[in-house]
Length: 187
Image 1 (cartoon, one colour):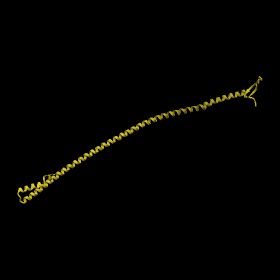
Image 2: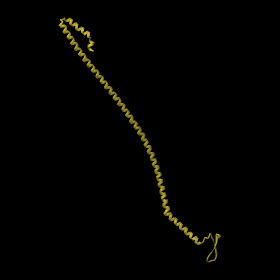
Image 3: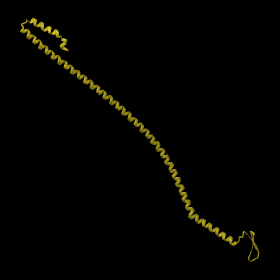
Image 4: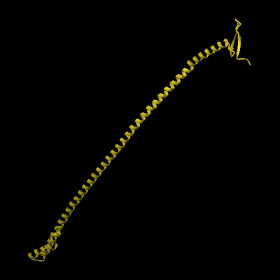
């Protein structure tokens, strides 16, 4: 194995210089140029690749933030609309109950009106029937009176035929009227 420290002979002076890990000036020069090339390549890659990717990621983050804020806004609006619609639903239920209550009141009013009209019609029919009964009673009374007059005149004719005197005839008419009675032929 070679020692890590090697002696290097310098060309002009004849001096020997020791190298660390076999490093010479050319190797250091190449390493510096390689490092510079890697740095320039890194800058070029950063400009050409990393910056667009970084911008793309920033735009994506901004879009995600906007989407989150939009979603939060939409959620708030939805909650507001939900509250509003629930209020409207309660109002609709109250309005429905009011309409039903009004319909019930109208139905009861119609029921009372129909019942009152039916009572009035029944009372009118009863009055009309009573009037017709009175008229029939009066007609029957008049017919009975006419029949009594006819019976009395027949009796009078029979009495005249039998030559009964007027006192007997009057007594027979009165007797007949008493038998029939005034209440009988008037009712």
